Amino acid sequence: GYVMFLDAVIFKLKGNSLLCNRRREFYIQMPLSIAFWLLFEFYNLHLVNWEYHGLPENKVELCIGMGLAFAMIMPGMFQTAEFLETLHFFDRFQIAKLRVSNRVIYSSIVLGFFFIMAPLLINRDYARYLFGLVWTGYVMIFDPIVYSSKGDSLLKDLEEGRLSRILSLFVAGYICGFLWEFWNYWSASKWVYTAPFMKDIKIFEMPVAGFLGFGPFAWEYFCFYHFCGLIGRKPQIN
Image 1 (tube, one colour):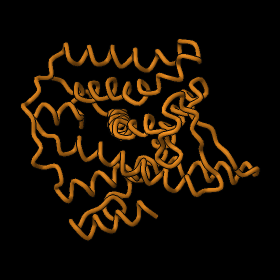
Image 2 (tube, rainbow, N blue to C red):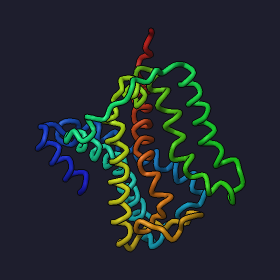
Image 3 (tube, rainbow, N blue to C red):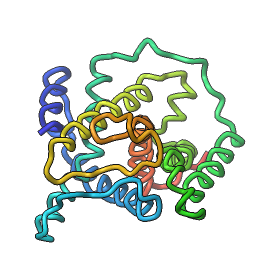
Image 4 (cartoon, helix red, strand yellow):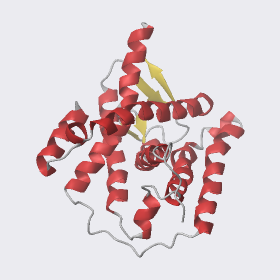
């Protein structure tokens, strides 16, 4: 419902929207959204940062319900970011143009690889404190690869000194995170967090330390989506 509502608002504002004009993108986003979230579920098997309560016993009902929920993660954040961009909230924010050298690209990928592997390779008692690495590491891997392949990347925005889309995605992550936690709080079937610190300072069920990850989480979904967009593309020759 949230995605459809925002789509209608966006279409009203600019005469073009995901569901009305770019439906193929929406159909692609849904399975990719599920696939990327399942990667985080894989991490959670080791980190144990959240668990599910009150899930339906019927497996078909469970799969359909969770599948629909996971499928809307990417469209929800992307629609929210597009709405913010349509309102030009962050157009005035610019920075000095970043020089994206090979050193920046390779360093980012290496550091990102360390970020995504470290939580899996150390003892669970310590790994559960490293969820922040998981929420940022894939940005550092996917985005430089997309940039190097002449795809649509956040690094390209930084190279041109533009912050509008970066900030729109970042804020969209927190808006969606707040709404997800609000809906989850009142739901019979819900996720409950077992984060290792700041347990008593919460936004609904979510400890504040975990909530801070929603901004980078939106960047990760953006970078993953455009990384997948490279599949089947002819390589660019400089």
